[in-house]
Amino acid sequence: MSAKRRHACINGHPIKNTKKTTAIQIAKNMFQLFLKTSKITQKDWESAYRRITSILENFPTKIIRLESYNGFSPELDKKHFDLIMDKGTPNEHISFWGDWMSYTGCITVRFYKNWEKQLELESTGEEVNQDKPITWYPHTPYKDDGSLPISNGIMPVRYHYIDTEGAHYRFALIAIGILLENLFPGRAFMTLWDENEESIDAVINWLEIHFNENFERPLFFDKTRLLETFINEYKNKKEAVCRMANLYRKKHKQNMEFAIKHIGYQPTFEFYAEVLADTSFGTFGFSDILMPWIAVTEDLEASLNLISASKQLLLSDKENERNIEKAAKYDLSYILKDLLGNYILWTPEQREQLEHFYTNKEALETGQEDLFGVMRRMMGYRVDICPIYATEKELFEAFMYHDPKKGAVFKKIIDDWINKNSNKYVDLKQKLEEKQREYEAAKLQPETGEADETMLYRSIKNFIEQYPKHEQFFIEKAIHANPNYIRIDEAMDDLKERVEKIIRSDKHQEYANRVKAFPKDRNINYIRSRIKEIGYSVHPEFERWLDEEQNENTLFHLHFLLALKLYDRDAHFARFRLLWDKGNWEHWQVSAKTRSINWSGEKGILP
Image (cartoon, rainbow, N blue to C red; front, side, top):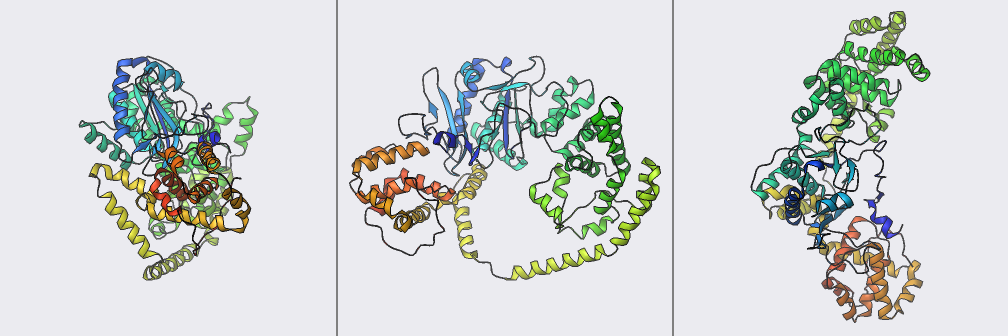
């Protein structure tokens, strides 16, 4: 993979095609920012730019820039702490990639001081209607296909979304989003995916102390206020339900609860009947909608009504053969078996006894299962619980009402399940008690590595407490992501040992012998070109250090350090710090010493 291609990756994964706005799998930590550009002036933006700069230059974990990927510049990148580029020119902009403390990053984000430049060079999307709220968007049917949220504004970045999974500079991005929503009420709107309330509260607290003023919560985390901004723009309230579903993708249970309470049961019912009809009966997608509906309504009749309504929608289009075929596959006996399999006949008291088993709780909350949830269910390691409790009589009568011709079938299914599962509750309860005993016994056993973990925990705790209270949330997150930040000497020693082990291995002796014969200038040229190829930032004095270095053994080790494909996270950070501080090279100013090393193997070298 070329260095330029590698730069276009997020944590090792290629950046998704940002030209598409549909059929994209939403990232776990997706960030979007929309601006109503028709209502923002150059003067407005200059004020925002100054504050964005203040956020990025003062954020606790030290935001850094990365422009050293191959082809960006003929010079090595020596100023990655200098976020402002082309200062004092029409092209002045602030550029950032990640943060120093967690040593995580994502795509480079740029904000230009000139508003026109921002729109020309770093923007995507469109403002569909200048007279409509930024939170509004023309009604489009909901598709449960991973489509991205869209809004009535332009995104001031060149991507339709930023996947910040694993990148801790997302907190700085959230701070910028909250800042702009407060600076430009009704003209800025931020959407997120899977950020918790604690993160938002921590960011707001930091902003309020940093700027010494109050900040309102972002609209995305205040659904009632968000709904108020656009609900009157839709004459059909079902479209407002759809809009919320399009904004909070795959959050089916939360969306259903909110829509029933704040928009109304009937428009919510009509919308989700359409969504259910758009799936295929009996599939995971069908369950992803039906099970959250069951969990929200906790009503057997309401759930069967939703199934019936979705089937009628398919049958209503007589000319659509595909829909007629889909409707023919609807079979309530399948639904009955599914509900029985999820223990609808078990009382709430019985189900409470099974709380320590893996359950389908998360799937019910979101309407979406992760891979492990699916595997546990398929392998029988999870107990799926139906949110509805019904007696045998209630269950039979409800299904008979919707399909009276199948009364005998329904009766047999229920009787067979009861006979087959008469001892199921007792068996599961016994398994639970066994697991509980194993858990209690395990607690009495000393944990391996407990002393080291306790020492690391204390070190992290002591380090965090050096910072002001309003910064500690971010420091803690960063240090847990990169503990080597506070144990850098150990990390670099480990890396040096790994390098020496590889040099001494039989596999690399031929290459090592060739490198030993290299003159100084050839080694230096290789080191420089390799840094450019991989894309490292270096100390401002790095090239002078190289030119002045007289110890051939040091240059030999630096050559190997950069030739090796050490892509694991610890090595990547330690290598960066070795390049950043010449004082760390002293270890190599004598010949390598043989020592006992616990090493698991590398991927080889680049000749």
